[in-house]
Length: 441
Image 1: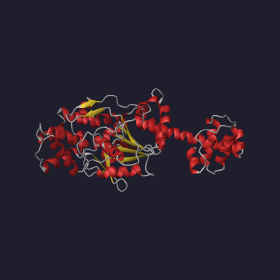
Image 2: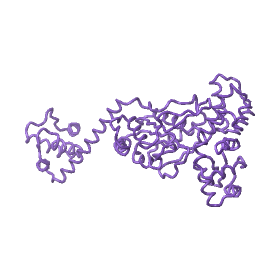
Image 3: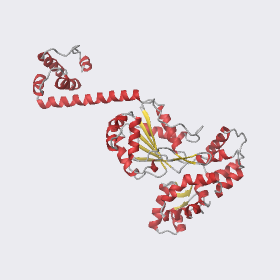
Image 4: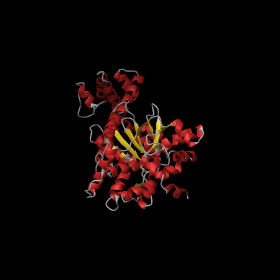
């Protein structure tokens, strides 16, 4: 109130008015200023905060307004007070919280290759006032969704204007470069977990024990009015994805959400889909050579061998890093042969990590169509050809095709023109191994 009085050139007493007459005179001066913010603060102070007690009617009379107008000023003052308290709470929470960016996980890579264009594009979308509030990074397991999300989050936290990054991981297992599937401790599994971790990272531990809906209601004023980036990684593993996104939607005001998922979220109209492509042949080679050099392996792989390797696994970073880890122990020719046969434990684990959960979720028609796609031309085939080759009815084919696209098992080329569909190279290699027979035995 005194700040507003100073702005209007009014007297700013060091102590409250000693008499009722002096208090009412000060109120009248505030209401004569023509400053609606000062009128709101003054109405609030004299009605509820001043040491002298006044009825609303007496204050309205002194301010020369009708009671209804005084109540409107009072409501404005309460709104100012709520905002000031919220700002004070946020300042206190920021001082108690970890430094900005501390929730971003440590990178599981030495260098990123072939993603600069993607990070720039995502950064533009996340900072555009009219840009999407929810962006979903989607693609095959191991294609680099988490690494890209982390790179974008790190870039954003280094820019001015972002308060912090919240990071909630629903990843349940990790694939090591030794070819082991390692369960992770305490991943987020539900909306309740997501709400609890977001609240904790915001410094709101006092919300512990409240239902998820109450936590989100308390979080909403903070995130909707303050620019955060909230990342939810491996969202497809959560139990209640269908209810999670509608529950998070009201939180997105100044805050943006960046999601990663193997399964598409295109069914939610407010989610912008960003398909994460595989690395180009040159970026894949750069990653492979970088990983080998990091491990002390200085010999260069001949270009024909790299071309053959890329034809088998494409630009999938997870598979490329596994190959780099094995080169010191096995001949490259043996590694390539094992990828085709999946007879070594590491290759079998790679396929299990990427494909097992997805294969289990497919309908019989989708499985049939996926296997029927093996003879496809590497450049893809059109819809009519694929349906004829599959032998499925139009209805079954349409549902199966949609499911393979939703689960990132099929790639669409030129979807707006004459769409052609093809398999990722690693998916085609996987389908030719005996792994599926082991799963269905």
